[in-house]
Image 1 (cartoon, rainbow, N blue to C red):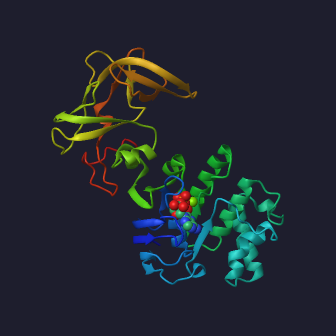
Image 2 (cartoon, rainbow, N blue to C red):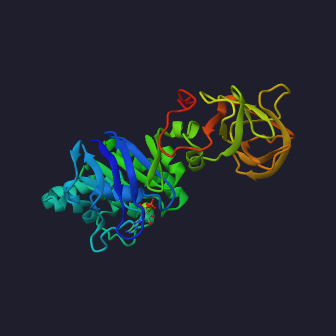
Image 3 (tube, protein in one colour):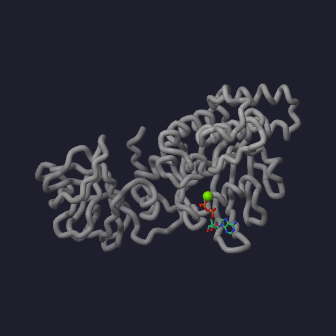
Length: 361
Ligand code: ADP
Ligand code: MG
């Protein structure tokens, strides 16, 4: 079942911007992450899909059917929220069976289905216990089982892992992804956590101020963001203001850098996106985009180190990452520098550098 937002706008009666002219389509079976900072409009989108908010402009459709006027319980959506929101007076298995009870499934059959779901989230041994003694991670697994037991057409997850510790969070990422794949439910995963979005989703929609900035695969989003604004949301980066001096040659003040400038003109102001891992420490003389300077702050992470490198003649450090530290120079591979327009349009614009070069696959 596809889930479509077509030019959807919603404003809260009192205050908040809600969402503004959102067009977004989740394909059948797709896990589409909606990523953005707090207050960007993520939950509003989810509530709209669920049917929890009235009075929006535009069209929302599930499986091609317009959802205008269709109540929550008729939409066949499963929902999981950050707060586990289990029914405290019901046992674990009764919680999971709740949606089936609402749909009039006979008691014996409900229990069988609910136990089956509990098995899949690894909690069948807790079936007849209360929910109040469960850990956060266990409660969220119950919530997930409860959402999936009705075989929803659409699964809506609102920051389902945000309240959990890192270890549990990582385990649950894999579990959610596996269950989502098995169920085939088209899924909207709301998260402010970019690692979560990139690692779990088929595609990611980056939202800010109620608007969608870019919808793309995790790889394209990271390698070819359409604007500096998106680049800042996704991964670590250094963004260098500069001006095109010649074809594929950008002046960033402390250096002339070789980079694909696409169809832009000489004299255009641009911003260059540099990812920390695309740095070569102490390159041989003659290497493209070799920059002399000094090593700054170093942060050790075990498998890698993230450090600042201050180019001679610059006050803006470059954020770099790698196991080996440079002594007095680095090089930036031109293939991994991305040219962005200096005044980014916030709507999707054609990729300036031609086909994205996705190095992942
Ligand atoms: P997110 O989930 O990305 O943190 P929300 O979708 O909850 O953001 O909120 C988007 C905007 O709408 C914010 O500016 C927020 O303040 C506002 N907003 C959210 N819920 C309400 C509400 N019930 N009443 C008024 N404004 C709201
Ligand atoms: Mg929210």
